[in-house]
Image (cartoon, rainbow, N blue to C red; front, side, top):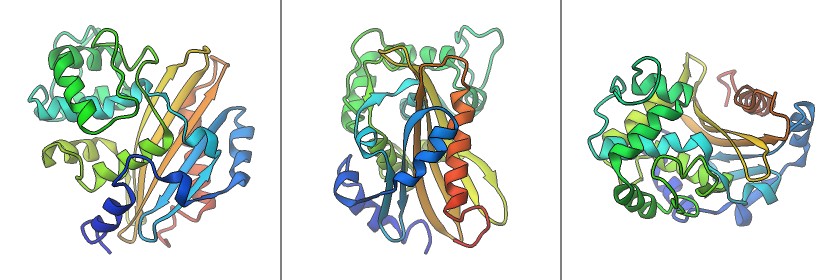
Length: 263
């Protein structure tokens, strides 16, 4: 079953931004991966072929949490849609970085100066229009246009992030197809004969001074697509939550039987 033959199922599952509560199987055995990393968090997973959803920590999965630098995904989509970004090599000259960096470099490193500069070029009214258009989380962009996703105003639940991943993959968002395909390309991290793994990360600090991290994306095996979102947080500022979130994600996917080309 290919990407396009799965489209109708994905549209049905994510016609609304949140659907986990009514459809999910809760797997609290996954808690061990978070405990071993000494973090709190949640994991949500969609088998798109069957429509099965698996969740660890349902309460957190449906709670709106700070978007942090995971907002770079939507920031990129809006940047392409509005012509501020033309391709992955687009440089934002006033990024404030020590050297000019491309979109691809900024996306991979979650460069805050790059995406702040992009947001200023987009402008608040345009940003608000697109955030409202796709009902991104709580849609709150109060404060400066270059920091609303960093100051805990803009929030989105892991469940909603899971829906966003599906919509990007199936080109279901109200952006031009090229914009969604560019984000797909930026998210592709591993591509071999057994599987393709695509993901983006994001970090930040919440209102309670906890550090948090997002890992969100999908894995493809044998033309089947599976979406996942991992959220982690801890009061310990010394934990690399980007690495921790990715390690937990891969550990859970491995337990589920992925990375062998057998799914």
